[in-house]
Length: 103
Image (cartoon, rainbow, N blue to C red; front, side):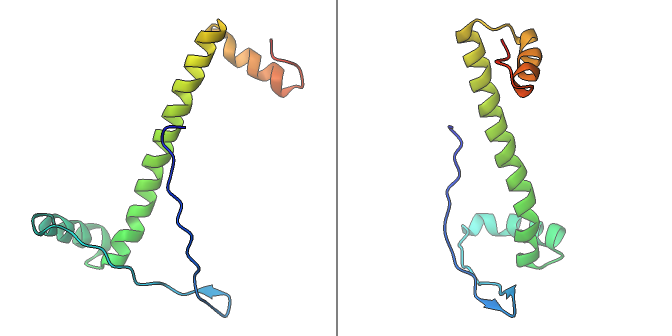
């Protein structure tokens, strides 16, 4: 798939079954700082960590949308290669899910 995610493994320190937060550093260009500050104020009530947590959901949804778009394009390419009409796809899927070949 074209839109693959990078996976980084980190081990969270656990205290009584609850993961403790880790401090991570990152840098921004001087010209980006006013925009970051504005976003932190708006989405994180002035708290950079809260802003970053809010950003997770948005970026995750964008990532999933891109992956689904890639999968859809792949499916459209394969059905065209196999000579399957788009209107026939739902019935073929139902047939496959019922244990048939879907053809």
